[in-house]
Amino acid sequence: MKINPMHSIQAYRKLQETQQKHNDKSTRSDQVEISSEAKEMAKSTDISAQRQQRVDEVKAQIEKGTYEINHKAVAKKFYEFWNK
Image (tube, rainbow, N blue to C red; front, side, top):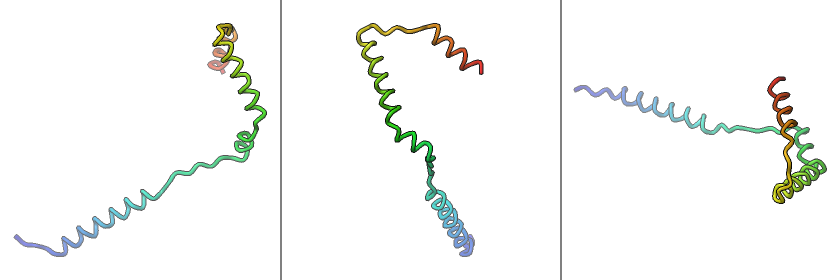
């Protein structure tokens, strides 16, 4: 059996190259950029406070058993959404 030392060195170099490529790919990362408009919306507490108040009212009505669903309005919203 003939042993070719150059073949061993080339195989080792190929292995190093593939590992280096793999390491380069793993150092990449995803980034998220939030627009200035979205940041302003997040700062807006007036809408959040109003929405939270409405959520609290609905929760209280559900707990009391007095919350009533307007089935026609719900169906109308579904219809409008699906038939745009």
